[in-house]
Length: 386
View (cartoon, rainbow, N blue to C red):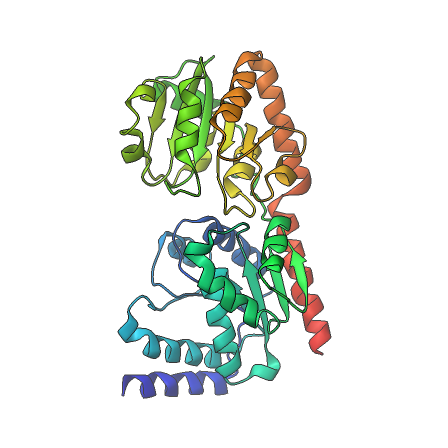
């Protein structure tokens, strides 16, 4: 009964010609890289005259409030329960029917596949286009293999597939993806938010017991095998004169299992003030073993004026250019050597290198560039449909 009442309301709204230009369908709205990118992109697309709605398949999350604060409506569904999936899928169809979007934009595997099913079944398909979003590269097949295979089967249905990395394109092509149109749109960084700040740097260094001339490396990632905290801590043990700050869910518990490095490493757990914390550092480290597409953490650190050290995973080399040190994944010795190199150079030179890293982000990966690329894509697709 509740469904028929809801569906009736949606039909009434549809008859009133309520339309949304773009409906984003995403797995969830936690604090991951894709979610943060969406939180930045949707309001900027709205300012470009494209109305937005975001549908989360797994309920609420920290990003939902950010979107709503920017005036972006958020629909919270819950596909986590097997019992409620059918009713939630019907709700998804009725929301799409009521909003009559010009575009359904999927984000990540679950979002892409859900958007595809909804696009095929919801009324108004001929007036709507489907776009997928690929957000990772050399994914762990044991974790995502089934989703990747389903994605490959249906990859020719979307009007366009957007990947955020060149490596992501190559890996998905190897796994059978054959899209009709493929675009690489790298993530963008808000340089007004992520920037050097000498006053905040001094304040936080005093708070964390770090001297002005201490060399500090920062690693921002949840504890996950993909992020390879273990290699980072093993490497840190042998680097003299380096202080390491770990930021991310699970870092405090992880650090407790490495008593030999506790004197030079601080773990802050999950934090929402990443931009502020980055001002403490001199070096941004990405130690990922696999799975990265475009590393937001790496680009944000560079935007804050930190010198990058990153494993050759995803588009790290493309992001850094010649501003940092690229190393193989799963190699503690190579990581220790790279960090030792940076610790040994004069502090003023380290800061100058950090400003060059920021300039690269400004020149190549500014948030406006990313937004403009998406706007151009949607406009071009609209012309083709006409």
